[in-house]
Every structure is written in structure tokens, then in C-alpha cells.
Image 1 (cartoon, each protein chain N blue to C red):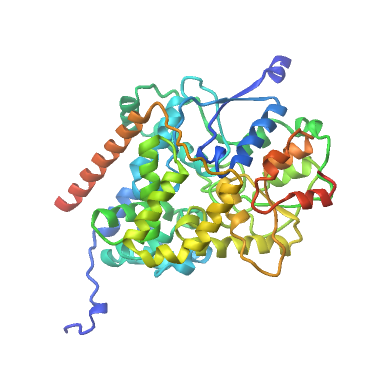
Image 2 (cartoon, each protein chain N blue to C red):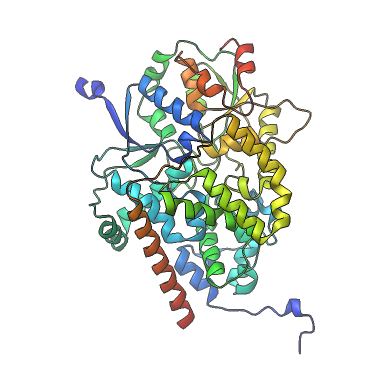
Length: 205
Length: 292
């Protein structure tokens, strides 16, 4: 029987759960859906699929749905779920793996969250430490270029916050560059090499 | 032996990026309080950012490698590493455990960073060190102005006590170490239900709306339980609670770092140089309680 409704036609990849288990070290197959993770999750209210639903979808191999969900970008890694899971599944490392896979496979990330992380990492690569002022300038530019309604929506509140921090002398304009910045860059290169090896082995596997 | 008691307590100190900027109150008060308690903090030379929420969010290996460099730098001194920020603490601890357990990873890090892993420099959170290494007597002895009449909601947040496999020095659902320290210095640590709820952490810059909702809920919980103020040991929690309380009928609640309250109780000089830098000025409350 052909499925008329496209939304119901979920393609499955039964190796998906195994890949996630392998890469995160968390046994996602042992979830029996008690939903404690969902009950305790501080950001479940802004997720399209709740944490327990996402786990179930991983078990069922619903790769595309999982990797395009907002859930993976809304998880802040607070570890409430992992602490309470009767099967000791920590979702924080699972979410880390899912985000990395989503980026590798060109699924669109949640713009604001992704742009912030990207700007933060570029700042560390440049200085060895995080420098708020240049990091925020890059973040706001990325947001403006990619999704300007988001940029304007938060602008007023952010400006107020920024002014507050400035007045209290909490922002420094001159970045602090560490001596070992070459070592930092070597770590970035090594991580990028590992990540592309993982990507290749999945494509060929 | 008595020599052990008298020996100075020496630690490697990892301040973290925010200790001089958005959490400058925490950085300044940590240094003076530790000095007053006879703890010698030796700043880790050339430390780097631990990667915060961003490294592990986008790249698993980078999330271990960046804090790994700090663990590497601390090997030579071989002293425990005191870390005031819970996220820095969690990442450095994760990196240390990974190097301890995973030989291939350790060798790779040793090769890139040219060091030898000894496993002696344990990353520890400041709160753990204050509550475990000092003893109640030492703290009590130092108090010159007890925080009498101050009702404090101790707020632990997320990764300070979680996951228990990484932390293990306090209960992950009902932690008490901070409450005990408040009690030791004469304050009243109230019972409340939001001790380990998350403030929204790094979403504050990308999704401030979510953080406002979460942080406001925590502050309202503290107010309902009868607290005058909240105390935290996290630069992220403090700034979220201090700047993201939704406007409402309730008066805004001051948020302190634990070390600020300790400095006050110890009667240390110049506490105003950091108290004046909060978004919600805590000084009217302190004056009202005759603590300033």
C-alpha cells in the first residue's frame, strides 16, 4: 500500500542506534521509555521532540527526523536526564554526537545557537581564551547575515545587557592572547582530522 | 603529625575566562577569601579556555582536547587544581579522567602537547575544596561579622554536582555543602526546591527568552521559600539570575557568589569594589541587615 501522506513516509536506518551507541558510549537501546528524562528536562518546552521521544526515534532508526530536530540544539547539557535515568543513559553526550552528525551531514542547525558556538570556538582558536567583545561582534554579524529577524528580535534586550555589563566594567576590549596559541591550533587541526575520518568511515560503512 | 596541619595548603589555580570579565566579582572575592583561609593559589601559567559549552557541543574531541591542555600544564606542579567555574571544572575533570583511562588518547595528547601525564593534578571545584580541605573550625575561626539574619537560598545549578560519575562529593539531587558553609558563617540557609534546576546556561546569548523563563522560575522559587538572596558558585548562573529576572510585581532579588558572602563574614576590606558591580545592587539588603 502506497503511503499518500508524505509526513508518514519516515525512512529508517536501523544501524543508526548502533552508530550513536558506538560514538557516544551511551547504550541508547536500553531505554524503556519511563520518560524521566523528559519530565526533568529544563528545555523540553522548546523542543519539537522531547528527550524520551528522541531516544525512541534513535532506536527506530529515524535518522532524518532526529538530525533535523530542534531538540539537539535546545539541549544545554545540564545532565539532569543522565543523573536520573534508571538505565544510566546520559543524553548529554548523545546530543553532542547528534549535533556533530547533523553538521557533517548538512542539516540546518538552529541559527542562533550554532552561530554562538561557532563564534565562541573561533575566539578560542584566535586567542586561546574567550574574548567576549570580539566573540559577540562575530556572533551578531553571523546572526544578521543568516537570519536577520532573529537578530532584531533579541537586539534590544541584548543591547541593554551589553550596556549593563559595560557600565559595571565587565567587558574588556583588549583580548588576552596566550603564549601557547600554536598548541591550541594543533588541537583544532587534530580534532578536525578525527571528525573527517569519522565522517568518511560512516559514508563507506 | 602537627607538621601536616601547619603545612601551607597549596593549589594550582585555574581562574577561567570569566573571572576577569563577566564574573569579575567571583574572581576577586575567590582570591582574597582563599588568602584569608591560608590557601595558596598559584595561577596556572598560560592556561587556555576549557571550551565551555561550545567545544563539546560542536566537536566531541575538541571538547576534551582544550581542557586537556590545562590538565597537561598542571602536571609539572602536581598540585590539585582549584577551579571556581563549574563548567570549567566539569570539562577539566572529564579531560583528566579520559587521560587516566584511555591510553591511546593520553599518548596522542602527550605527543601533541609534549608533556608527561602523571595523574597527580586533580581538577577540583572550589566549593569541594572549601568544604573538604578546611574543616569547620578553620572557617568559624575566621568569622568576625556573622551573617546574622540573612536568609540565603543556596543555588547549585547543573554541572557543579552532575553527573555524579564526574563529581561525587555532594548529592546530585539534594546537595548541602554550600548550605553548610553558609551556616558556618552565621547565615540562614533556607530549604527550597530549585537547588539543582538549570538556569539556561549558555543559551543566554543565543536564546535569552528561554533563559529568562528558567531563571525567573528559580528566583521566584527562592522568593516563595522566604529567601532574601541567592548564593551561587557559578559565573554563568550568577549572571543569568542577576540579569534575567523578568520584570514583575516582586522586587528583584540580589544574587551573590559564595566567596562574596564569605569575604563579608570574614570582615575583609574593600568588599564594595565587587559588590557595586552587580546588576541588581545587593548593598541595600546588606545595609538593611546591618552587614555593610
